[in-house]
Length: 515
Image (tube, rainbow, N blue to C red; front, side, top):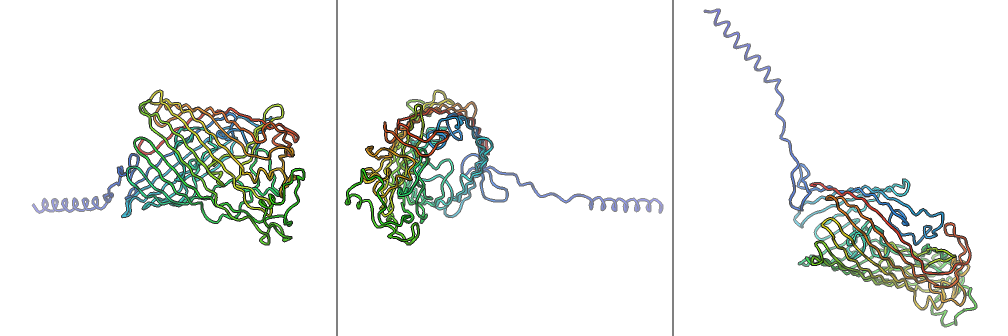
């Protein structure tokens, strides 16, 4: 009996010991896994960042552009070296892009706090790679700080925002592709209406000092713009309702120049055959350097002036014509603000044709001569378009634009671009005869059609055909060029209107979280 009790007690003790050892070897219970949760506060595609109340949406696209008679698969060959249209110019170009964006939002006592970042990585024309932060901004309590699309951009334009043109539209005030640095405040007025006020980074064309500036076909003049003193202020009113969108903006552009750079009070008049009377010259000229060191603070400078522009546009839905149909247009007008009223991307044209012909012109915000005052340039642009959906996933948009660049009577009658009233004819690479009206203003217009097919959601195949026309300065006159463009030689050409047809094809796949 004692033996049996000993065996039972020994066995029990052994089991307790074994059980204790096994219990000690068991793993510690893991913490619960925190799964990513859907955030429904801001629409589809947002998820909570684990461990926070921040909602995040990730998106982007991959794009391939192929162009004919365009630079970088988007800019028509009307200016720069491409305008030579000789055997130095490659009509074929490509651009491929990877785009990523991150949209984060959270609620605060003052409303939604939002940050947005977008980055382009472009590979253009034989491995020219660039990385560009297209967006990097913060929005909170009505304020917008950072790099983003300007509130002054209006609807009704051919660009991606309205009619989806694949060409880089030259003659619209556009910051949609790469953004602008700005600070802005938005008042929500209700019923889809907002009032926005702010300031953007300065956008300018050249201020040309025609006393010694070099004006070349297809190239903007060397600029004599003065210091960047402050951002450009603006005011915008916008409506976004069931019928469509409307926007109007007023932009105030500071135009200021550097110092005069000629020691003479009134430089010698080069074109003596057309020299103006003393009173007319005096109207253009003021006091100059008076023998001081030219181009320094010892010299004078033109008085600062304020340029301005009014930008307006509308996009109207037309369901009665077909589901998704819409039409609209835009109109911009400005003085001393050519980058707004004439277009962010518009440049001085130089398009060569056959039989020694060339279409040319000069775009500036203003001009002056040593000892003179600023003469501001007037520009205006109008455009319209219509997009029709043949099927739910197949559409065609047609569009057209027209721009005028005009110089005032002081510039034309004093022949400032032709070497009179203190301007230097010797420095000009574009020369016309003494009897020719010296007006380098020009007209620029386009017509185009872009067709889009969306075979599956988020995938776009499109082709855009555009005709660009330059109505030249000095029409029908002999123009002497003293500098080569591409492989075009120096010598005498005839100024004649020219046009060019260009084509862009695009394949793009867009994606976002939640798809």
